[in-house]
Image 1 (spheres, rainbow, N blue to C red):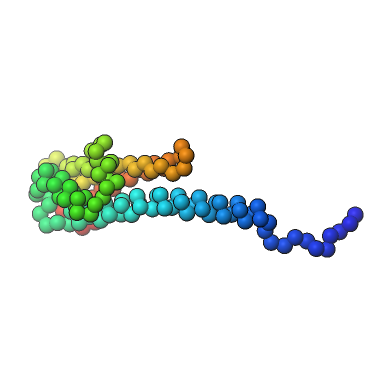
Image 2 (image 1 turned 120 degrees about the vertical axis):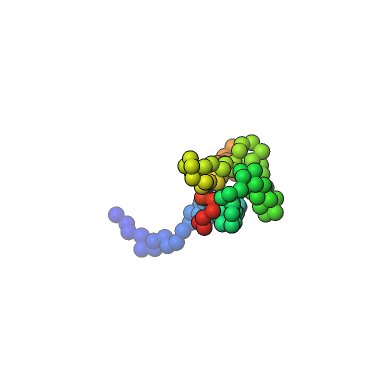
Length: 134
């Protein structure tokens, strides 16, 4: 049996191509998903600032929805506007009967096309209690 003293060291061209392909796919996925998560972070911040407004708990549901629309229009949350066209994203519900505490909930889905027939579906849900700092 003959032993080869010069063993291969390092990666071959095919290995480098596979590594580069995986890195490019991961980068393109992050570029598609990242903005949706940043927008969700803006939605959470918006909901926290609405909940922290003084006297918001005594306001009507219509006022709360108007505040939500105002924040969405000012911040240019276009992905959220697209989701709001299909379903009711924001809901104001009372926590308990008799108590005047309300909860503002956002629940929406964002679908992003990626490659060919592959898409990402992201489901976001967040809720705050009005009148409290969250």
